[in-house]
Image (cartoon, rainbow, N blue to C red; front, side, top):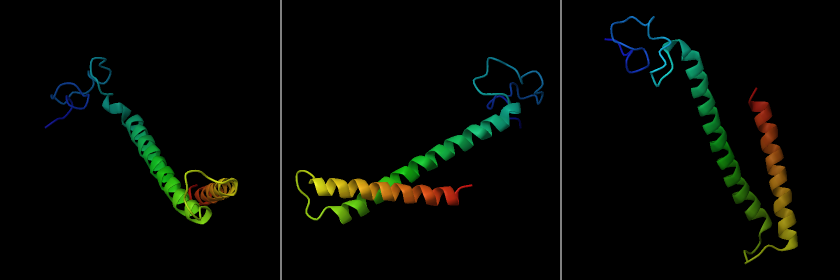
Length: 104
């Protein structure tokens, strides 16, 4: 059984030579599997980056808030603001060092 018609290959007769450059198919020809793989890898990398960023922001909020804010109020004092800024910068710097070391 051939899936050529479903995946851009044309007819199910097994002959893929006449359908490899068909402009009417919405999917790329089977010969572009490396390009498709690259697009999938890029999408997975982007999703992983978003997940890492969310985790980083969550941890920054959790740790820096606990360290810098003694009693929550309606606004931040100047000292709390400076503490949060310094804490976030240190956390981001440490995160970047770890990721540069971990990811080749």
